[in-house]
Amino acid sequence: MTTAPTKKKLKRKTVPELRARKGGEPIVCLTAYTAPTAELIDPHVDLLLVGDSLAMVLYGMDSTLGISLDTMIGHGKAVVRASRQALVSVDLPFGSYQESKEQAFRNAARVMAETGCQSVKLEGGIEMAETVRFLTERGIPVCGHVGLTPQSVHTIGGFRSRGRDHDEATRIVEDAKAIAEAGAFMVVLEGTVEPVAARVTEETPVPVIGIGASPRCDGQILVTEDVVGMFTAFRPKFVKRYAELGEELSAAVKTFAADVRTRRFPESEHCFRSEPRKITG
Ligand code: KIV
Image (cartoon, rainbow, N blue to C red; front, top):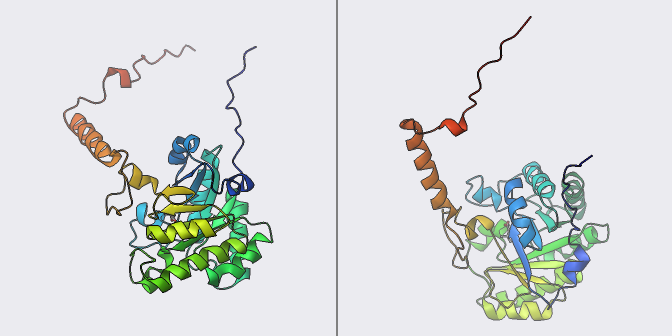
């Protein structure tokens, strides 16, 4: 008897494994919001982030503020289901953790239990350290996020790069250290000038993952749709395009539409041709 080939179960990367990569081989991270994307990119990355950037990239919002916890959980479930070896982290959305450490625990626990992800990410530095400690001491691995924190876009006054003056630079370094000392296993550093990114990486005892924060970090993260040309509303300076899938999609759909209109599609190979069977009684 033959058996159907089974998918070999791969061991997922763990929080301690990634934590131990400080100063070592660069850590590769990308966002994933859906099952098909997660399945395609999982073999190539160390960490998949279900980022709240999906508010802008998938839902067309003009900031990340409007996305709900339930929506993040739905996308988190899909990404965990479709991935096999990358560690999955899910963003806690705006308003789901800032009120109190108890609120943060309740919502982070829901995200972990309902999605099966291995960690959550939250934004903020010194002011969130107590919350990070509360979560990590209770079994919730936390990835921090400092520098440009998109959930504070209205306080900051836009998506501008950070660390350009002495006070701001010092605060970013202190923020990253505070979050790491509170137990975060990793810190995302966004939109921060290179000399400050270098200091943050040097002085923070856990891996610092840059996005728009120069090569002087322990790893890099980008939004996958930016990398492959599927998000064209705007392109931040720090994005490198590795493909133009948006253009390919548009060209493919244009050809499909023309084929339907001229009856070139479907062709015989796309049809079920057999004659109906005679029913004998
Ligand atoms: O929401 C997100 O995708 C992020 C990354 C860009 C770091 O936080």
